Image (cartoon, rainbow, N blue to C red; front, side):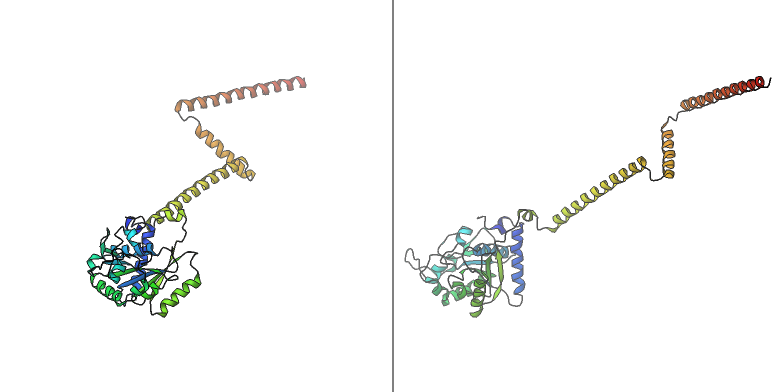
Length: 328
């Protein structure tokens, strides 16, 4: 199975989710008339038409629809290469009735042309040999009868058409299908060319479901983000939690710095006095609180007071003697 079938190989990828969204949009646009046939075309080659067609068919098959994918690009078909099925017999062989390689007639039994793929509910009819007149084969009644027969066998027919700017094959097919989707390339498809294709399809009576803008550049950072909203919410929550904790830490540090500044440079003398008393109280609280240390401190205080009293008494006695001598 080719890597191009991302809807099958990686169904949980963001790209697969985009294809499921496209499938849902197509279904809702055809609620009144039941959608049975869908044509995928483009303006110019290399716009991703066949890739979009293959993955869109896979999403319909994954939804339980029995899908038959017809590769109607008989000039340069790629669906047999994408799904790794046999390139022939294909659509051109069925419409022409013979094999161009051998020149032999081929049976009209559809079982010989419908090939089963590895994907459940999905079948492919390859383009077959390159005929000399693809447009004439598509406009024939046999093509219309083929679509009518396939409608009885499946729930949805998806047709991979040709680019409309080069040939008119897809313009012809747009008349006999229920709806058409145009694939365009980002910054490559010209608006005038796209408007011309839309006008041509509408002029022949075709209905356009919408336009797919393909190959939009996506940054690696955005691509890594899952389409599950839960993971994004959790990431945002983690980010907010980190910022909140960092904010609280910065506030705590700032408060401590301001407190240190107030201790170093008080704003007024009264506050300085109060702070000095608080610091003295803290220092006293830090002193030993044991009973033995408390007794020692009290004894030292008493001793210092007794010495001071003796000194004062001696000084007073000396002064009294001096007064007596002066009076004599």
